[in-house]
Image (cartoon, rainbow, N blue to C red):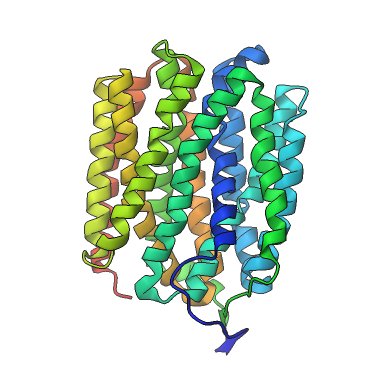
Length: 384
């Protein structure tokens, strides 16, 4: 084994990575409350405009393998620099897209670059933070995600209501470009190397299980969240109000991370997964029965908390499955997560277009049961 560089072990991510993760998620979550507005502005059906969200998610997930391989070879910070430049430029280009086709293409390109930011940050934490403290550090990254989810949907609704949906895409693009300057002087952490790990990737049954769980989790908790604002708008709510209420999903993520952080030192990982899965099933079950503003808002908080419990635990698991290939494994996990989100967003788009949100949420609740059982039992049996 060789070590590329010596680094004092921190217990939390650098502020620059928290900021990059925040604005990366602002860019990702801002599109949900804009779908109906873009459809009206471009005189296109909602199912077509939803391709801007599903295409972004496909690119975000599909690019992960490349980014993971590059981060294992070049380092986490060089990959972050490339991603910030690309995301800033393609994000700004999205603001002047003349047609829906061009917009979808630019959102796909932006998703491919933004896709490197959070996984590289997770890899940085995996390289620099001790395993016992790792879930706590990753909870800080998730807190940035939760803050972004909440503010993105709220800001997107307000800005689009009083200005233009195009301005919404400019905000994270400019911020990500400027964050390139904050990476100066940040040390690249030590990375384990030695031996060919690709054979290990193909033969690790635990890795395959983690990837499958990530795929289903992404389909339910990320794909389902995409349609929170459209479901509220279908009920007759205005854009700004729908965006504000959908933002409670991010509040759930943020508050959930604050609970998970201390609990991760007291409860076993399988118990955290069981709690998250129970919240997931319960939240979607309520949404399937009632699509009122109160029911959807409260359920959004519950689903955000479910994401905090389940995702932070699965994410921590992914950093430990194959430490020598940590960057690749984390990237594959993220690819699975957003691949599931993209697939579910596209598959249920016809249901959303017909206003059949109750059916869509009921399917999510039913799929949540086997996900919870498989995640909890699998993690309980895995030995680090």
